[in-house]
Picture (cartoon, rainbow, N blue to C red):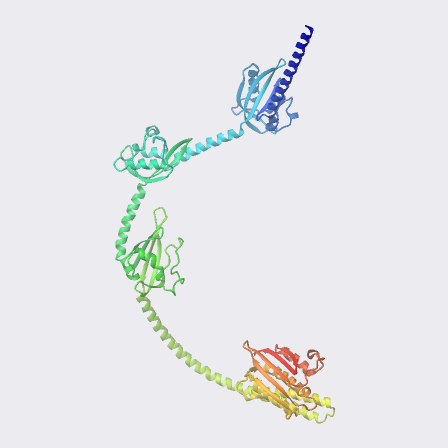
Length: 634
């Protein structure tokens, strides 16, 4: 028996432990739900917060120390949106909840930083260890309120647009009954909304002029989400029949599938179109017999009319041919010139007239004058283009003949006057040129004589000089003076004082040097010379260069009375460059001597004079010596 009682006590202890374990698990679950809830949860005792979850801290923007132990009225604004006192009303609601009456209400709270926000609040009381406490569950509904306000504003805006539209708007349900209508439609039909709603479109339509089977087809297509546009006849209660343009499309009306019919009274437009057609008929009647070509296009640019005269001018039979072939008829020389064939832009209203040639269908060239202007509809939109094309071939020919006659007459008078003046000018010019030629001849003659006097003085002076070196120097100076003298002698003997035939001059200069150095028997001069004319400024330094180079060949190329040849050439390249070459087949130029940096006065002169004529001097070494000077033509 004792053993049995011990066994019962052991089982009771095990059961108690299991109950305590389950209780702890339950408490942990409730604590987790409390802590991780998406709403703010406050536990309130004696009107003070004794516990709160994480969402409370996040929602009110504070930390736990700032909220624990504080009364809830610290988080209430002074007034609620309805003007009620927040603290008194909240206190009354808590009393009701403490008395066992759960409370649910909308409330404005304050975040810790003073910002108000909208909430839903649930208050419930519960007892723990004999103490009554309150549980306040607070849900932030700020975004929901904003969405509701936006929705309300959208509905208000919709009805403002709906009722201020000048079109007649009908909302039609799936049974094809009108469930809403705007103010413009009510005003037009002179009915109240109640009199229209619940009826079909047939109530508002003229039965004689409308096809209601066709209306059924339009409604069916619109329910298939294919927008419909058609003309319809309306009829008011006082019997007024008027035309409408109706656009029917599928839509949504506060969550319901509906058809929306937008209708517009087009009475004025039809009157205008009829008036325009009458005007067009009158215009075409007048245009057909006009003495100038006339064409008209629609707003897309398609040619819709050409008159008889334009067919005659172009040789084209109809509007289609004119559209395709007119620009191709423009004369090739006139395409792109002036305005021929240029696209016309809207800004070019009352376009200025311009003239060009065409080669018409019959291969006849004609001069035409064209002018365009836009046509506008009543709402200032472009309705098309009208243009006039006038055949001015005969006018142009007459004008050209008249102009030619005037030009010929003016030209004759001008030429007669010009010839008379030119004869006088030529006479004066001949006198002036004759005086100038005489003066230049005299100048060159005197310069030549003066140079010859200097040469004779040097020659006379040489007869008193015994030193061979000094005598050689005097001789070289005399040769240089002679080379310049020859230039002036050539100019004196020619009629052209601006240029010298340098080929003839070279031959005279080289022959004189050959004679001067007494080598006529053993040194032969060879020439390859083009006809090259040089000015005095170029001829003198070029002659001195030849003088120095030929003199050097005569002095040094053939020692010990050797025989040899000197080659003098002057050529002109295709680019106008002159090439002067002085070559000999003698002993050659010393390899140790730099001709550009030598003490020889003659070679120094050659280098300096080559620079003076902007030339380039080159020494080509081989058998003998060959100096080449390249300089531009002058």
